[in-house]
Length: 222
Image (cartoon, helix red, strand yellow):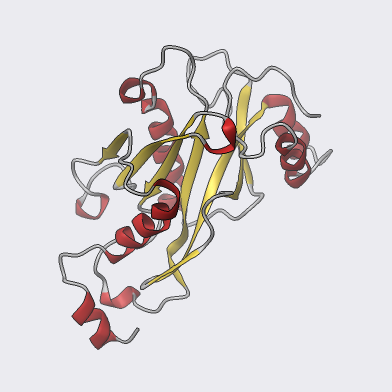
């Protein structure tokens, strides 16, 4: 797309990158609305504290296991930006997703806040450091991924979201990277090079093909 076609198709107040993410979700969720959408009051580009402008949470039955599916808006270039047109990668080149098994009695409006904070904290690291993530990168959480919880999930591995292939936007490519929760034992063994992240993922997939995070998981795969 050349600059003239870009100007003709999109308005300066438009959000072609955001629209491209919505279009990628359409084959999965159709007209289904998110359970909730977490948006920033003051956008990061205007001085807001949180780098991610929006996080949608969908109810998913995929894989036969009901869960919440989080999708971020903000690691890629969302808004009208002629300078971003035709880039290889849209800003950092990815958005994050996260699949979470709700605990009994959880209400999405209150009990997804911690996961939203987790995603925003990762974004703060990316935006401040300039570093990005790719499939099978991993990171320790230095404690439970949900603060003040007795979960054994203490780390994360990044994979390509099983339902969301890479897309091409007017601002470049965007990959959807899903966070996969792993136990303290698993993340320590990756750190100590006793096993690699891809092997952990292969083992987790055997009983959990969509790699939904279960905070109550007690058994490690190592």
